[in-house]
Length: 171
Image 1 (tube, rainbow, N blue to C red):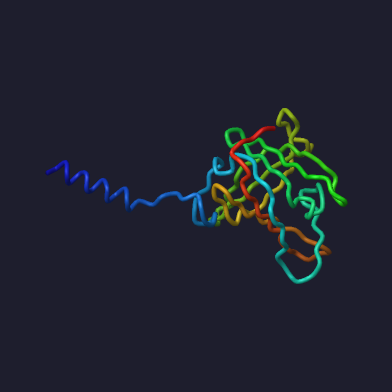
Image 2 (image 1 turned 90 degrees about the horizontal axis):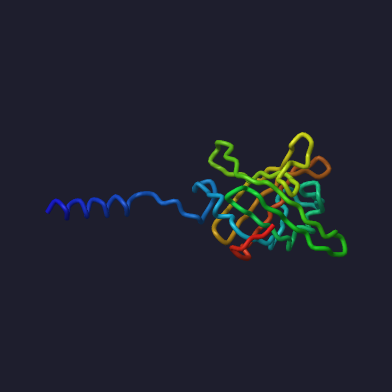
């Protein structure tokens, strides 16, 4: 009888305990670096702010449309990664190695931060500067990242939607 009571109690506790889902908004779920493991592609870029035309030079690399279709690789165990931009009429092909991590500002949200590094993961910037973007959504196959920026003094956000291409990764 005691065993049955313990079994029922254990099942009740397990079924009622909160689980850490990998889906949904980053503000309601603790995210894990392992969720980003693999190769991702930027499938959409949009602007959020006052109506108008925007020009956004993202990460001091290229204009925002150049990032559409870019491939991003994330390796969770050591925080290394890279992203590549394809060449087009207005974009020069480039590959950029990064060292990345998550940052929790304390308001229930998560941000991805990264800095450019060389092949030995040494920072390329002399004063070790980097970039930080808010994660609006993250699950095992989908991520929405928001980059706050300004154009002609007006603030707006560039919202990048990522889809997972594969679990594979290679630098």
